[in-house]
Every structure is written in C-alpha cells, then in structure tokens.
Image (cartoon, rainbow, N blue to C red):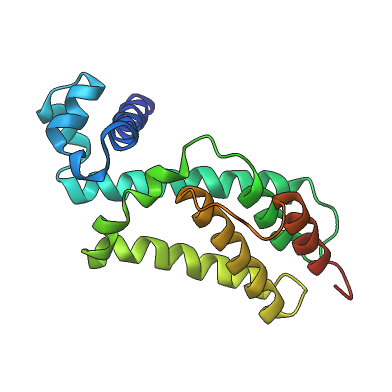
Length: 181
C-alpha cells in the first residue's frame, strides 16, 4: 500500500473513531464516517469495502497503537526475564492516546462477527506466545496480562472504586515480573 493510501486509511479510521466517541457505536455508519472524513462514500468504500472491513481496520489500528507502545517499553528494558510482561504492564497503565471507550463501543460488532472476533483472538495468541517465553512462570505471566486487561477495561467502562491506587497495582504487577516475584 502506498503512502498516500495509508494516510487516507488512517484519516478514515480517525474519522470513524471521532464518530464513535461523539455519537456511539450505533452511529458508526459508512455515511457518517465518510462525512466526518470529508470524503465521498465511494472514496471510503475504495479503502474499506463494507462496514465490517472498516470496523476491522479500526480494531487493528487500536491494537497497533497499543502494541507499538509495548514494543517501545520492551526496547528500553535490558532485563530479559519478564521483559514483555513489564512492557505490557507499563503500556496498559499509561494514558492512552485514543479513549478506550472507543474500543468498548466496538464490542457489539465483534460479538456478532466471527471474522471480527478473530482479531482479538489473534492478538491474544500473539501475547500468549510472547509471555510464555518471557522467563517467568507462564501462569504468573497470564495473571499479569489478565490484571492489566481488567485494569484498562475498568478504565474504559468508567468503573469507579478500585481497591488500590493504580500506581500501587502497577508496582505490585512489576514486582511479579522479577525473579522470586
């Protein structure tokens, strides 16, 4: 894909995210996204031939942002034991550029579509493989991943009343990535 096509795809995804944030998941239509991006519906269909392709593009884009953040933390960590887990923790507890509510707004689409459901399953397989080879017990790495996923889900859903401040939770999870954790 050429640079211009990539820029247009990202513009369309950003427009879809804006519609999602401002109006909710039920309003993410091809027409609404095209209008938000100030392109014709035909222009949008050139990049995303249907709504499911657009939703898949949004999900992959959001996962790509998160994974790029994890990889930056991974690159800055010199301790090979627990390195992926620590990077996942830091990325999960960071403030995210895209409101997590946007991803939550896509859950109904994912629930209704096997091809869309395959995207998070593919991401989970990738993370399970990375964390299985992270040098800490696999069950511990899984607990860390599940705790991080729960943390960001609660943030995305605006759930109040965590039992402990997020910095304390992050510190405890990081401790679990160290030898003897």
